[in-house]
Image 1 (cartoon, rainbow, N blue to C red):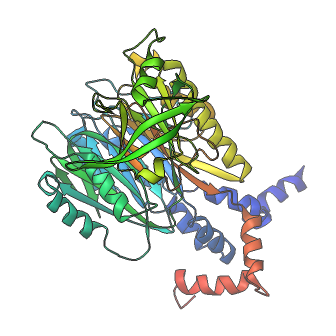
Image 2: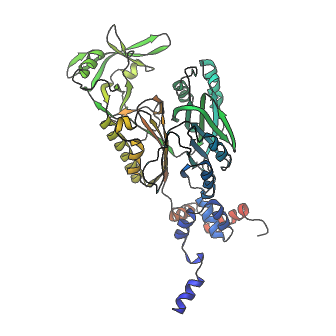
Image 3: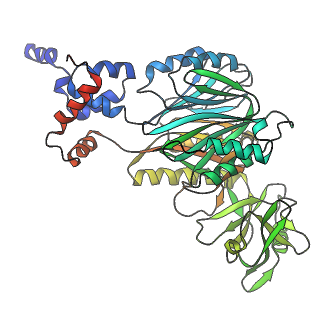
Length: 497
């Protein structure tokens, strides 16, 4: 027994292998990890590697309690998003000033949703709640910049084009993702967020744009300086290696056969241009799109639910859903109007009609998140957290529970943080029906839409000490530990050491 106690007394971190140390250091706040770097060269090397890892943190509470977040961070955050209620707005200003320097945006009077590891269920604030929500994210290989475009810069095509040209001007690595919060309070806020998204997509092909429409005031934080803005758009431009991936869920039932576009025409009426689908064919029979739509609607019991036409162009992975409105058809010939699409891209494609339903919506979000889970697992990756932008119509009135989209996420990713809010219009990849392949909409067209749930997920490769050592060995270093430590010594330790 005496010898056993002696062994325990003489044990130190030197008796732990690198794998165990790697796991322990990962759980340390940045301040403690910084102290540990000074204890040995091995610890300095491991801490340096860990601080290259992305992370995602979600917290809610009073402004004062959120200041405690600073001591829990593993490294400096790159971006942040906050949502406040009207009652918590002033407290949020003080809390944001105390955060580590990062680029952050936020919306006021937002009904937010949070999923925190270890918490019971999904949290939604009461109307008079004084709590606010905050998400911070570290993207070590990315560069972030926040911006604000006022209502005056968005009100006409010329000023909008000038503002977007300046925003998207080359400044280093390519822009991979834009997160937008559009703030509107009154009809006098005359800009259309859809114009902003389309303008960004034209200038940044292949860049994902996600976000939502909220209420003013808007918040922007740059290097601890808090700015309050009125109507307009705040956003985050993310350049470089940005491991955020977008996916959109809506959920519809097919209510018609799949038709082939047998006749398409070019169309232009004033500023509106695109194509007319003049004839559809199925099973050897031809009809106008309007006739096909009427046939699809006749057997439906519920006709007040939103109805969409799905267009699947050649080589597409699914049917892009577009709402049926009173301007969807060219009445004279019963043709379907398809804006912004050339005739040749529509000819030979497929059309089908769909209806939004509660059951289909819940099933679709579950299928989308399950596909993401399986895809991540197959690729040996990890989901660290996610942003959610969900329609304010997808609440208790639709599903019978207040936050179904967040609740399904929690059931599939029980220990993963989620931060979102109910939007008055969601920004993200166009919703699709009968989608094939990856759930992530890499390179898909983004737009402002309704009755959708848009997820922006932080997905990174699984990483452990074995992978780190393998990377060192692949670099061809004879003694990787000592050579890398020599470089770390110059960076982290005084020359006298």
